[in-house]
Image 1 (cartoon, one colour):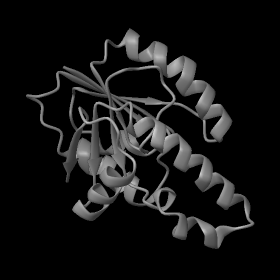
Image 2 (image 1 turned 90 degrees about the horizontal axis):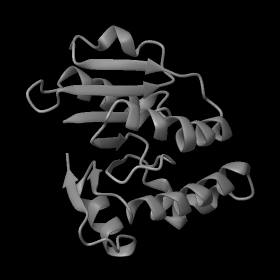
Image 3 (image 1 turned 135 degrees about the vertical axis):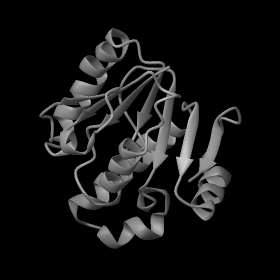
Image 4 (image 1 turned 180 degrees about the vertical axis):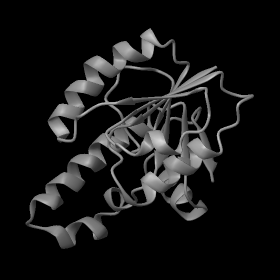
Length: 169
C-alpha cells in the first residue's frame, strides 16, 4: 500500500510535531512507500526511513495551495499510485476518493470560538474553514481525532457519512 501525505498546510506547532512523530515511527511493514508533499524545508532531516519520499513544494499562500492541491496533487497521487491520502490539516482540495483526515483544529467547529475574532479577517477565515471541513468530513473514508470529546462533538453535529471510520489517537 502506498500512502500519500498532504502536509502542505502544515508549517509549525502541533501539526508539525504530529507529522514528524508519524514519520519517525512509520511502520515499514504496512506501507511499501510513503510520499509526503510539504512546504517545510527541515522535514528531510527527520526521515530516516528509506521508503519515505519527501517532495518539497513552495506554495505557502492559500490560493497557491488550493490550485496546487486541486490540479497538481491530484495528478501526482495518480503518478505515484497512492492508495490513501492522509490530510494533515483536515482537508485537501485534491480530487481523490480515499482521504483520511486528521482533525487538529477544533476552533472552526465551535462558533463560540470563532465569534471573538469578529470583525477581523481571521473570523472569515474560520467560517470558510468550517464550511470546507464540514464538506471534507462527509466525503472522507476515515477521520483521526486527537481526543474523544472532539470526536463525540463533531460526530454528533457534523458527520453524516456513517460509513466513515473514526479513530482517536
